[in-house]
Length: 139
Image (cartoon, rainbow, N blue to C red; front, side, top):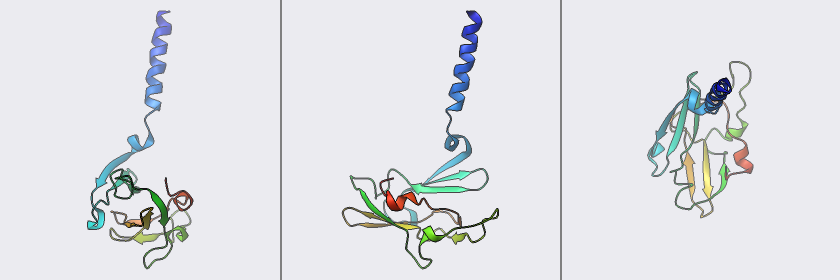
């Protein structure tokens, strides 16, 4: 019984380690307030150790705070057109669109009619947009 307790403790320790999410383990988290000098445009930027960035809106963002609800996410913005049409190919991701900190990625349209611009907050190549946001904007 004494050894069974030891093994049980080791298993519990391993289970606790397995529960660490990849975001917690592999990404450095940054939060950027008022992106593009737009009041309430708060975003998160997760930087992977391989220099990949994941960008999204923070819980304090004006589009989802103060009881607002998102009605639509419009990806067809700016001079470069529809960001969902950006499809890099191959191992080196040729054809990826280069974006700057002030490039518009999409617009969030709220149920009260406000339209909020979303910018990347970092410069780099755009590899992918979350296509599900087009059909499920509440995500």
